[in-house]
Length: 332
Image 1 (cartoon, rainbow, N blue to C red):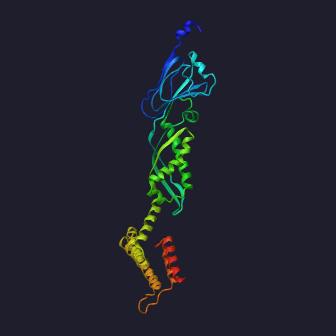
Image 2 (image 1 turned 120 degrees about the vertical axis):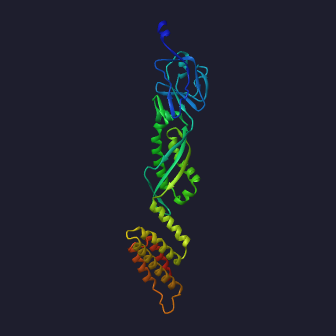
Image 3 (image 1 turned 120 degrees about the horizontal axis):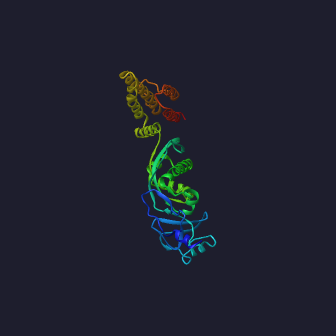
């Protein structure tokens, strides 16, 4: 190389990255056709890591600090032979900066319900939403598996992959978990931590660390939630007599909402009264307290009448099964 070529050639003597705005995870320092000068200054700021890539291989990784690039101070973590000899004269190498800041307030959620087998409710369709945060922990793995040689790689570009990974892992975890839905909802802090621990290995595979993971809402389909509410109401009601009264009162707004108005309300009330009569008959038989001159009805006949109400849709299958079991106990 002649003297005029040396004069024309431009050398890099300062290497740094001032992050402009949020959302950049990886940034390639602009080299163009320039070479790095022996004795050049490398500045790595807090929440940054600089990676030198020589001929396609990672040569050195630098944490926060000010470095003078000479053979006396390099290499730092290299596994490449003769890498340090490059610093005896101007050399060409790719330099990448990675942000190690915690990327907060990332959102996740189930676009469609996840079907899981709850040990108390059986198969249910579950929806979940929340937030999470992460940061780059292993820039070498992140470079090799994610960002590569691109000029920049952003949080927005990573978002879709992480959301898919979260939902896949979350669905798998929920399928194997033996935590009832009611326990999840009542202990969301603890459930969030358990879920975070289950998801962490998936982030590790990309050189990332899952810092925080929050499950902010868990919900079931409206019809399942309505059943849970009704079951809770039944427990509060208690005995059969009160349950019959509850059913009668519960049927009035349902029937009134149907076409026919007051007639529908009358039909609903009649159904409730019929249910009450059957339950009262069952109670009389069970306690031996039939009225004067009135014979206690056979439990099997009562079950048959209840089945008639089930067929007409007055009571649900679960309600019929519960009352049937209770009446059969009176026979044994």
